[in-house]
Length: 516
Image 1: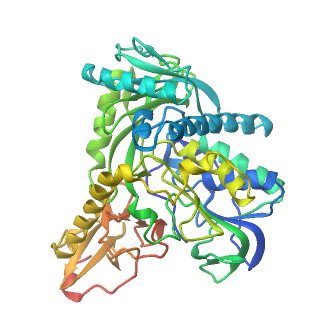
Image 2 (image 1 turned 45 degrees about the horizontal axis):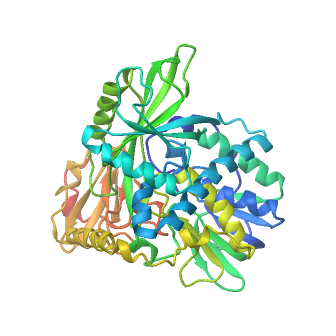
Image 3 (image 1 turned 90 degrees about the vertical axis):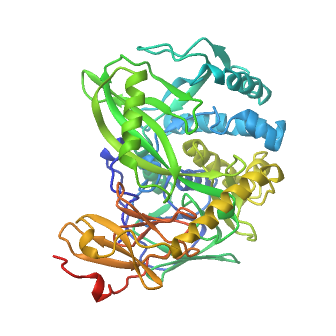
């Protein structure tokens, strides 16, 4: 069966989530949702509350994708900055963004209270601070834009609370939120089932067709027919071109470090660097210590394989700003989709009438997923929702054409990998437990040597649009540098837009000498 989304383990993954059986027969429902992360389960919950029949399918466990790899900031301090959104989309859209993310935090809080969910939810202050004195102007622009967006309670402060040093001038965003994402999703999945919804894990979707009814076909041949389909798979697996030219996949890195109990206030911090750092207290480790989690050091998916130094830089940065004790207890990475114009895509899939998507989460995945739950429910039930125009997947972002060109030039450059030599010449050069790409004549072969030294070979061509995958030594995965598809070491697809596995191939005999 397909694996989870990587080899590292986040702090959140230490809790268990309910297990649900695979889909065993074809069936009919009102709405079929593909993906059991924050977006998929939020949408299922809201639809069930409106009296709809819902089936959720996922090729792994509940929360087994990127939701379990977040740092779980619940924030209306928008990742791409309000002054940037206003410059691209105007003040009205900026206000809708602020309104929707604020509403998402409120909605999560209400669900936690209504359903009595134990997930460490709490309200905290958030601080956007200038990494350098020269970036003070950035804060001034953002303060004015945040006020124009309706966030009148955002204020400028001399510096956020810090037990070690003055972090410099900052903007205070009050009443942000945080929670344990997998504890929340596990409880939410149980409530979904109690409301009459169905969740089927270990069920891989291979095809999504618009129509009356829309149809979702699974790998074992079963079909779910529905009035509407929601594809909530981090990036759409039903859309081959349109959306994937308007967003880019990035790996982001996280370390969890021990700090003395109550030595760091319950708050959130973000700096103005690019890529920026984001920080929060995750919770109690024991009677004497809390866990501080720090993220950042992003790079485009499949275009670097240097997680070790990135984790080290994160730990070093944390040690210079917070009273951390010792080396990191946790190291993990996750994947975020960055839209070229800063806004998520939540709505009807371009060209379809009954298929809906949610993607482009950027650094606000938990609130974007919750926004999707509310917005898509309204769209599916033909109800007006003012947020729809902000997140419309069919929008044309004329002001972002420069970013569109830059990202797609970057994609085009990746196809040059077809012309390069392989990472190694022979399988014996690959250490057990690692992978590498080998060139054989006109072909490139992705080879993984398992811990026993046995080689597993695959066509290195990503089945989405034909880029050559690259080995990710930290997550033990094959990552596509073009649009972010990912496959585990054995070639199973674990992240779209690819919907099928890497093709197994035979290794040429001349590449096998002296392999033990």
